[in-house]
Length: 183
Picture 1 (cartoon, one colour):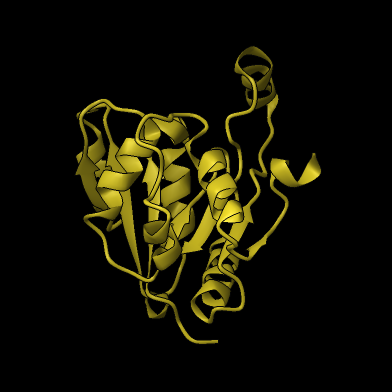
Picture 2 (cartoon, one colour; picture 1 turned 90 degrees about the vertical axis):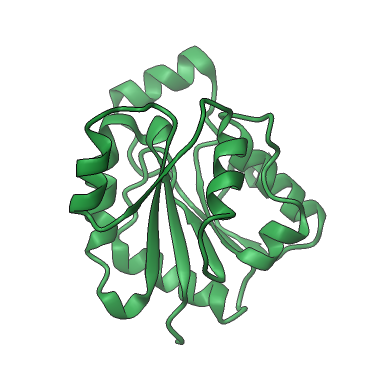
C-alpha cells in the first residue's frame, strides 16, 4: 500500500485527560507514515503547549465553539489527503490507523469509521446522562470532507455522526460499524 499523507486531529475538549495517551498512541507511528498530528484546543489550559511539543504535534488554538466549528477551522490549517478524527475514548493502535488511512488513500474506500473501543464506567455513565456522543471516529478522504462542506459548524457532540450521515447521503463508500448502520 502507498503511504498516505494525512492529518490526525485530536480535540482536547473531546479527549480530556486522555490526551497524553492519545498522543502517545499516534507518536508510535514511524515517520515513514507521514502524518501531521494536530491538537485542537479551546480550553486555554496552560499545560497544553508543553504536552503537545513533547509529542511533536501542532497546537491549534480556537475560541470556545462547537466541535464542528473547531474541526473545520483546524482542517483549514493542515495538509494531507486523508483526515483522521480518532473517537472519544478510541484505542485504535497506531499501525491500524495507518492501515485504514492507506486504504482511504488508495481509494479502496472513501470513509472508514473507527469504533470507540474504550467503554469504561465513566463512558457508560456519560452515555446514560447525555446520550450517545457520536462515538465513533472517522478516517476519510479530504476531498469528500471538502465536497460536502465539512462539519456543521453548529454541532458539538453529534458533529461526526452528522458528517457520516451527509457522506452516506452523498454516496461516499463507508466501511465500519457506525451506530447509523445498526438501525
